[in-house]
Image (cartoon, rainbow, N blue to C red; front, side, top):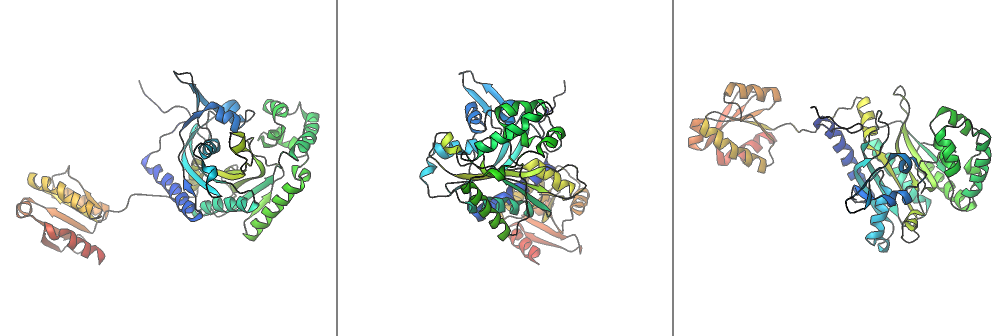
Length: 423
């Protein structure tokens, strides 16, 4: 019997782990600069959290959740996205009483049951940043700038921000009415999913990627023409902030995002480099001013976004960026003889405690083969411990470049190595 990874699941091998760590490090650096604290929520949450928070009419809840029932009868779901769990933690731990804004970020695995394809898996990683407590558009601009900075730091140079406002509970109902009136004329042309969306949540039709639905959407009324004065002013100020920041944005009047909790601002960031296949959003997010209250908290404005790690890594690789997280060893420790091998183990630990990166081949007995390995690694200095040196508590320091060697006591070994490495 051969065991394989499940469909849509993938192993992160050592050579790929360097890319994940790179993304994590860049996120951590940005979070530190912008004042976001890291939060880790459980992978399993109550199913109702996502049904209520993400929205029952969304594809995520309707088709993509991995759900289970425990022996005790609890209905749980592997988290398909991050925001509802963050909001649950925000409420549960009394963060509503903290000074505003409350800034949180996360990095971890998520799960969706969907058809696997390039850059899209059933277990995938996301990073996200969420800001709670401030409703002004300057927060939206800061979130967009933060994600733009992260992508730039990861080597993306040709980015575009697509942005829209989908209004709020004051103006959106009027837009929905006009949108439904338009879409009903083309109901038979729409795909089956969009025919269902037309009944349950007509805005989601605008998000459909099927070409026949896109042709219909291109003639649909635009929500930006239906915004109330408050939503209009909020969006106008946001665009002024983006222009002041000199961020490249494109107004997309049909951008709605695929989640029910968004209000006002929605945005996605794309890499525009040509000849890399169809465009995919690297980052997406927006404002969700009603979600905290919907999940049982106080009325709290909020804004956030998330980035797909695998999509970002795939594009980094496509651009030819190669990462190797292993630091080059400073020295190589060679040993000859049983006593030398035993003593070499403790010498290895002394070097580690002194923060000197050391390579070894304890499984080899031949000095020649060990020196050959040191050469292949490009190590300048080799420490040689033979039977005689082991008895006298000494060690040979050999310069592989010049061929010179020097015998020193083991006690002075670290000092001598550091002196040579400094030169």
